[in-house]
Length: 330
Image (cartoon, rainbow, N blue to C red):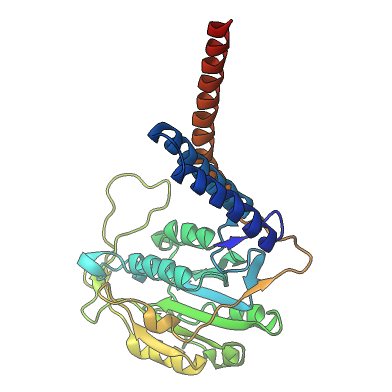
């Protein structure tokens, strides 16, 4: 909390200290308890008025004209069918873990700029860089696996071309944080490309791995027009529900190529390690007027107004008594 007094602080101190002292002396010397209470009320009025004239305001210590920071965070999320495998907490889809982790990282790195890119049969930038963490969380909450009918094999390096173009054009002087979230499952015939080509642009982040060695079944995604209950994706070679397992070796390879840490994720742990060491310092716009700080004088004005009404009521009573005495004498 800070103060913006309406007059010089020393002058206010002298004036209101003198007024408060006067009312206290009058309360002590009052001839009756009724008069003493009236002077105590007046003392409180003086104190409240002085506090209001100090103009207390809320200040949480952060710049009120902050417009972001020099930290750019890129979430690159695997949305292939395997990310629907039910081996997250209590047999939930892996994407639920992704949603929880993105929400936690966004909260921990508040003030940074965030972007979301998903990849499956196509790589799509869902949200360009923004300081609106709520928009990021809403986008990830609405995110689903690819439509099963369109699945044609996935490559863990599918977003590489997009990242090469995006990161090469990043704003100079900014810190680039990259989070790759996936299960490492490579179903495309070709070998994945190396992420080493973008390592020079990456200042930090992590590769976050989802899934278990035992794996899990995957429900189909029939799209918005799908009807009836969802079925599990079938492995054509066995006629049984297909099982997707995490490939930690592939994910560790990506982490090594990027020069970041690999972290296996599960519901019992947090993303503390993925966010450690990242400092987000708000920047300000010199051409932007600071937003007004919330003032608290109105909180003091409520009891001040009530005491003032009591004082006015007392004055009216005194005037009526005085008039009655004069009329009695006449």
